[in-house]
View 1: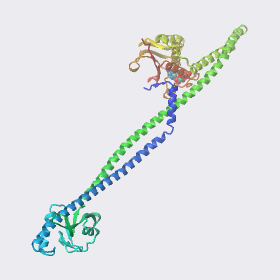
View 2 (view 1 turned 90 degrees about the vertical axis):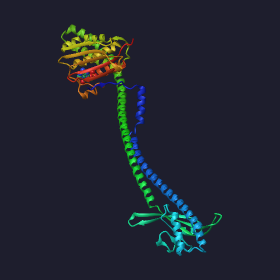
View 3 (view 1 turned 180 degrees about the vertical axis):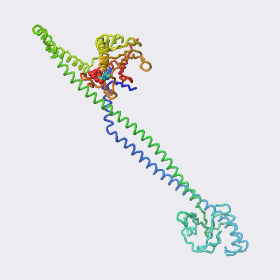
View 4 (view 1 turned 60 degrees about the horizontal axis):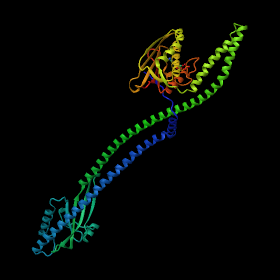
Length: 491
Ligand code: ADP
């Protein structure tokens, strides 16, 4: 059921706040675009930050892996150094050797046993021992023994007593695939003296640790973290987009509401100006009209004596009366009176209206059905209420030129408006078209040849001035229904 509810015009305070809203929301498209812009830049920033963070974290992990393994290699080197110094040297001395000669089978096997036992269980790939000429004199990898040419910086620093580790990346056969990463640690071999202090450098250890798998794990972790972050960020972005979409919708709704308010504000301003003009003109017209009307009455009396059939003066009197009615209606609209509220019987006002209209009702063959119930007394100005109901009844009568039924019903309103009485006036006339329904309360809107279009505007003014409500709706079968809520008399 379509129900057209008429709302009161905004008061001055409302107007002021509306003005602010209108001014504040002028560039409505701007925040909308900004929100979109922020959502995309936000997404971009989050992606960049995520990539940066995962690269940073994996780089940190790589650094930690290197430094841990470096420490590890240094510890192994120290341990080897002790074994060589304490066991190897002492044993060969006890066997009568005066110098280290690893080419000799006994010494080599002793060293090999010692080194292999020492690194057993450690994560060490292989160990080389260099002499001062950069030649490998011992290696856990027999193929490397007696190879020469080591002159790297790390080797030289080890000869000077300093341990250095370097990560060596060997390219695989197929580009990135099969790449190996070896941590190469050069550490001095020192003769440990009897008091436990370190003595002269005897040679250099080279310890190899294969970090390929550990590295691969970190790289995998890096890929996984980037992937997971991208996934989470995409989800976040989708959520953000949803929020932005909703924000867009809300902004759009607000804009539409603002436009409606703006329109209403302009309309009420236009109406206020129009009302002032109408009031001024009507006021000016009324006085000469009164003079014309009374002069015509006198003329009619005089003319009757000489020409009893002459209708000219009657026409002037009749048209002056009609004009006066229009002017009165204009003034009622333009200068609504403040209601003189008193305890009023709803039934009495309605009965008075129907009594006044009885000849009209009879003339058009209209039957009236009254059902009075609900609160008997209301707070209202009986004269203004009479005028409001009169306009509604006249509309109903004009909608039924070939007769029909007017139903008048009064009840109490349940629920929210429990302190309100309800008056329903329905007719079985031509009804209201949907396109008319929207404009029905607009001043000067009329579908009638002789209509002023002010009847319902006046009714609306009167009802809202009574703190009441008015709805008008077409009936499904035929006709229209006007519903009015008015405040009940409080005890
Ligand atoms: P007027 O009666 O001078 O046209 P109103 O403001 O009273 O001015 O009514 C405005 C318009 O509302 C009418 O012209 C008519 O189209 C429509 N209207 C009002 N009441 C009814 C009704 N009971 N049935 C059908 N149409 C109606």
